[in-house]
Length: 326
Length: 248
Image 1 (cartoon, rainbow over the protein chains, first blue to last red):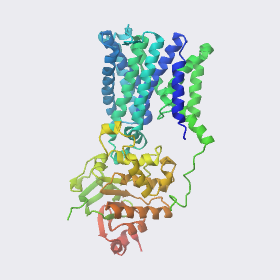
Image 2 (image 1 turned 180 degrees about the vertical axis):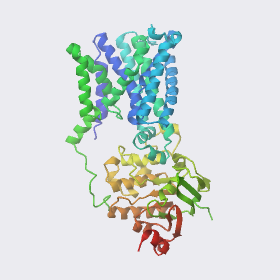
Image 3 (image 1 turned 120 degrees about the vertical axis):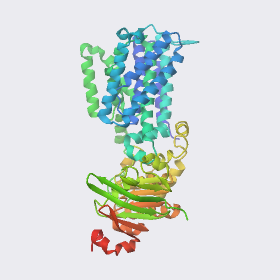
Image 4 (image 1 turned 60 degrees about the vertical axis):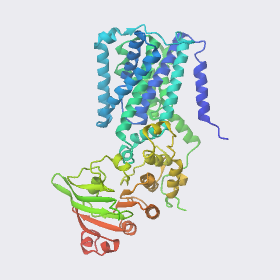
């Protein structure tokens, strides 16, 4: 019988995610919750960039839309579970609109369009004080009350976030394994060929942006009750670049890459804190080394090890028998 | 008698001052294998791109199964039953051979929502395996398409073009860069598919042996215009064609 190694590994990691925070201080639980939240944001960008090949430097702005929507609604007395779908739909629609430039421009031109969008959202949040509180931001948002399960304590909110992250990951798994996922990959690898095979590449491009943006919105909606204070500076360009770094370091186009990338970007600086003033320098150096030696992301190390110890059959090269004719 | 599968009427296309295609007209009937040949710069590729909607002709009209298709997007054209292969390799290198073939059929099955919530393979694995077996690629089913040899990728490309059961397939230099053994296998598969399904082919090719043995009719282009049309035997002995293209 074939052992489902991948499933076993996922179950082990899930068990670790449940057990590790037990008995830990609030700060560590806060950091782990941040890791889960940024993993969700990175999952969304991974769909847009890693699977569909569309660059976006605006993921933090969708976190902002999700965060401010849930903040404003929960402060007005609505339940977080009511505010969440509204935030997600808003991000989906805005993401769809942001996808339109991707139908005309590609590569670094598209990167600049999305960068401009991120700046636009930041300026709107800072300048529209009547709605967003401007630079003072919004504070005092309640954590979701789920009846029998209160999320007021840091540990219970961590488990709540873990539950949301698992649901988001399962949904993403379903998307990337479906014919939609195949169409996203086809768009990334050869859009002209994909179009000639009946794939509506315009629709697929827009969906890649819209779904990826909704994941950003979900992450933002979780930031609100975690920190209970949001301000525009938390969603600037630097944060979009951080999410991009998570996707690239973890392995763009790999399902588990965003979790690994978010762990490196969120957890590694915490691990290096014992070096005091040097921790950011060491962290930056390690990231550069990773990108130089493992450009396919940390998940690529697994592929290299597998190839070394269990090489695949070589199919290329001169094959005088062609397609192994019978 | 049914009308032509492909009808090309008075197609004109210029680039600046250069008239690449000059009033070309022809019909292709069901089950025909039409070869389009001619020297470099004769307008074959421009004509191909006008038929496939990648270029908008300055004048004239292209119809598939009686329906005008000029200006339609490639995906729409494909859903109307037009498949194609490319001169350059056009597989999806990081997807398996099976996934390449399934992708080629999935947009023709179900709705957007059923493709999201339905089976991951869109119910096409068996059909894709039949196509893989037809091109004798069974042993490569689960390999990444990018790891295959050039000729093998050409076969995968052709299998993708046929997966959705098109009524018309346009093959752009299918023999280019393929070794002799593989080429014979490729030609055999194309002829078998044509015989089994009655699919109409239009082939651009420079390999004269390939064209002469596969095609039932040949059109010769020179300087954007048709200079000869006929069976392979008629073309082989046509003095105008010999003078302009084939040589003595």
